[in-house]
Each structure stands twice: as C-alpha cells, then as structure tokens.
Length: 395
Image (cartoon, rainbow, N blue to C red; front, side, top):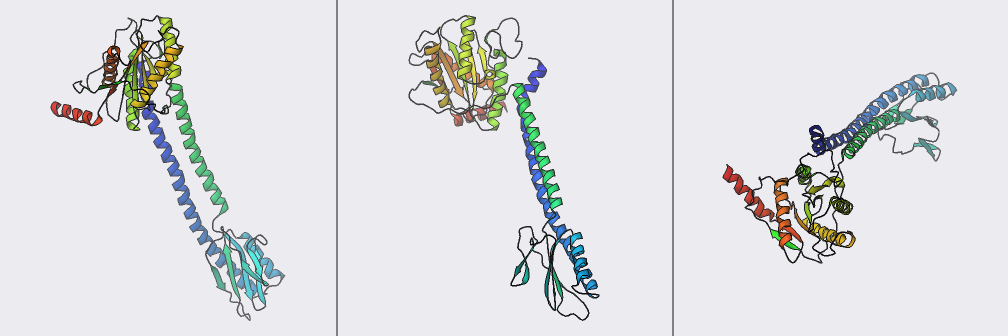
C-alpha cells in the first residue's frame, strides 16, 4: 500500500462525517426554504385575491349600472372570474335574489333552501371578501367571494425544487457510501449476546505501563509488505495493525462504542498452509477480512468494533471450540491455541497501549493452567486518574 493510499484510507472516516453533515444541512435547507416559500406564497395569494376582488367588484358595479343580471351582465362577470388567478366563486345579491358564479360548477358553491353558500374546503382561504355594489336604482346589492388559499402552480414548483435538493443529498450520501465500500471500509458488527456459562481468567490493569509506549512489532521478513493482504495468510500485514487499530479506536470513541482486541496464537508450530487455513477459519468466524492481521509466525490479531469485553470473551470461547472441533490440525484440546484480549471500556487510549494489554493477557494465557483465554480487565476510573497523574508529571 502506498503512502497516498494509506492517507486516503485513514481519511475516509473524517470525509464520511463531513459528507454526512453536508447532507443534513442540505435536507434542513430544503425543508426550511420550502416552509418559508410556502408561507410567502400564501401571503402573496391573499394580496392578489384582495386586488382581484376589488377589480371584479368594480366591473360588477359598472356593468350593473347599464343592465343588471341580464345575459350580457352574467357573461361579463363570468369572464372576469375566469381571468382571475385566485378568486374561485362569487355570490351577488340583488333585490330579486342571490346569484352564484363559479370557475368550476358545484366545486365552491352549494345551494341551501334556494340560497347559495360557499363550500368550506381545505384549499379555500379563510379570508372574507365582501363589498356593497353602488348601482343606481338598486338597493341591497352586494358582492362576496372566496379565493384559493395558495397558487397550485407555485406550490408545485416549490415541491419540485425541494424534492430536487433532497435528491441531491441522497445522491451525495449514496456515492460517499459507494466510495467507502470501494476503499474497503466495513460496517460495525452487531453486538452478540453474551454467555456467562464459563469464566476465563482476567489480568487486572497494571498502570505502571506507560500509555505512550509504542508496541514493539515482531521480526518480519526482509521484504516489506506489498498490497493490502499478506499472500501467506490472505489477511492484513502485521505492519498495518497499529494504524488500523488507531483509526478504529478514534471512530469508536467518536460514536461512544466499545471495541475489543483479540491476540490469538497457536500452541504448536504450524506451516504456511495450516496458518492460511487457520486465517480463513478466523475470517469466517469473526468479522471482515480487513480487520484481521498477522501476528508473528503463527498468530492472528482481530480488531472487533462494537462489542464489549464480556461479549469478546464469549466470542473467544466459541472460536476456541470451533477450532478444536473443525480445524484438522488441532490437538483436539483446549490448549490448541491461546487468546489474550482487552477492550476500550470507555477509555481514550492509543493503539500501542491496547496492543500491550492484549499481549500481556496472551502471555498470561500461555502460563495459566486453568484457561487458555485471558482478558485484560481495566478500571476506567483508575485509568483516568493514572493518565491525569502522568500529564501532571510531564507538565
């Protein structure tokens, strides 16, 4: 893996968070602008309706001075209503009764006891429009109207543009997820149910270990790692363990999730073919391939985000049983391999410290006569006090 590839891989989590924040901003912007534009559209519709009503009332009064409710008058009122953008219906009352005019028949007016009444609809404005008509020789002549609450055309345009913004956010999120998948980032595993039937030993935290110490890697072949996975095992090179663990610790700390680290070592010397088969068993049992790494000549390191120490212990027990039952080169005993494990346990710690804890647990497992699985159990409060004391000494 080149330096540029490492930089891009390490920056994927930060890039993903930035894109997620951008998508949230896009969604909020889309919703807020839609709400604001709809509000102003409704207010503008009220202003337009008032202006159009005054205009139609003027036509009704002027035309009525020449002839009232004859065929010419009715046609003039219908034409004025048809050209209106907001007025839906009119009711004109005169000496001889009330007369209804609608853009669409029977949509806005209902007749009750031979008297027209406006229909209450959700899309009709609650604004009241009423004016007396000054027509010579006619008394008690009035005009009233109802208007639509909003412009359908404007409302449709707002929804289309809002949907477009939301789709932009979805597209951005989709391509970001696709990019992360291509780089090789895997989703966090679900936490498995814990099983307390067996109780392997614990190594209590030793705060004499300096958390700033760097884990010393074992000797490697003279040639350096090439590519993401080692050809010997088809899992990650040992040299990449610390870098990936630091990245996963940072991600779990930001999301307040736990993380458990396993160090597994076979008790007997095994050849390359046996080791590759063991690595395949581990890949299928634990998690995605890019979170498993070689450890020495016959060991495997497993980074398991999303589970606590108790769940990790159960997972280790099941893996031991799986190897004993299914691995053809196993001695069919519980000492076929040793497992040391530790977890983040709510602590802010570096990869070097966590790897040292798992190594200490593994070394204890090799000498423990009761259990080949040992967990390094920390006290988060005691650990925080220790870190604070170290910082005080340095200052």
